[in-house]
Image 1 (cartoon, helix red, strand yellow):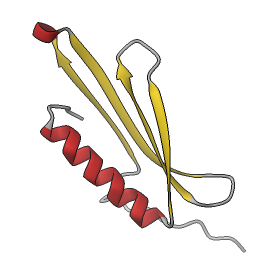
Image 2: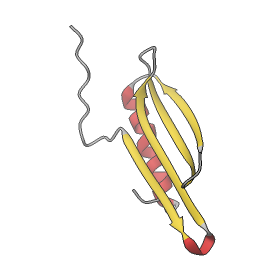
Image 3: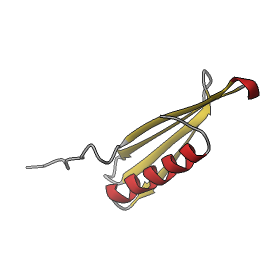
Length: 86
């Protein structure tokens, strides 16, 4: 019998942020999510770009879900320092 791992709410697996500054004509989004790929590895999927347009995407593979969530939290903290809000 397969048991899926239980994810606590203390560690989010999805983060959506945006940065809007009308004075600089800046409307950006940044999304991150931890997902499993077809081989069962934990992946951090990152998407970013201008709101209303198709952005860019990057997938990082990690050895386990904990390391992927740690990477997500570090990137989210860096984006908050740059002015993004959740």
